[in-house]
Length: 359
Image (cartoon, rainbow, N blue to C red; front, side, top):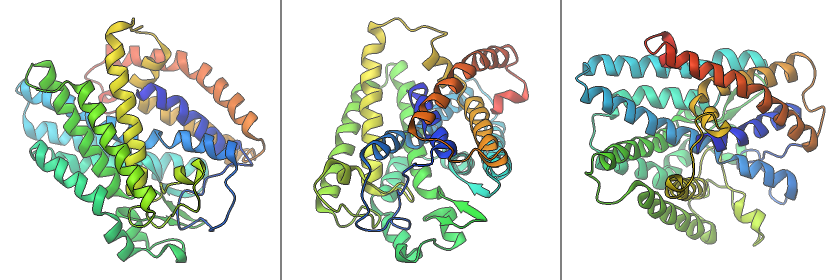
């Protein structure tokens, strides 16, 4: 599943760097009511919306599996917490250091959200799964209320403090597009699912992970349909302006609305459930591209983002092409990345106690 969204992510970042016709008005703060939605550009952008929720949810899942296994082997809980915090700090710093250098603008995006959420999980992991689900759903359902108190989308950017926790901030000098709390909510759900996977492996789960995903997915997609149909609360002020499919899908990612999270998590859960059902029926190739990319996600992300950003912003290639250019560049990057990721996976496995365990 993570490998699938890595492919979509390359397309999105290639478009961000080189597509002069890119459409990315995914916030009430940047949207002008009545603006036309270009079908092809919008559809490509919408497909890539799946990337960040999947990335964050599965980061929580993978971290939970790793932590619970270490604790079961008798590892000191304090050391486990330190490792979580160290890993979170490293991931968080990718945006203000590496990505900001590439785009020549101080930037806090998905890596900031993942890293900061991971740091908080060192504390939140001590809560039972029921409490984590309750906290997560509380923000997903009610988050628009505190966000609206801190941000007026008709004025554009929120304040900088608000942007780091609930809203967003965008100027030529600073970009904060991934507020902590909504993405932390998604990571908490991922953590709970990681625990569920371990319980299922030990025969403790009454419902299989695949069926769990399908149930969660059905509920999430139902929430999306109800909220988008009502077209009032839950859209983070980015309302549906008609009955076309594009208008139904034009949901707020910055910051994530209830309709956005219902739609994207719903698609994620259903897809993941289906993949888990068909996995026993197909042959899993250990060197298959999707598996290799999914197992080297951090390395994959850093390399392709750095190459794209530096090419666009330091060598004058930003927006020089179109959607065709985007697809060609994406394919070339994927071909180049595959042997690199294959090598990185092998090297990391050969050095399990090195600093690479944090990446």
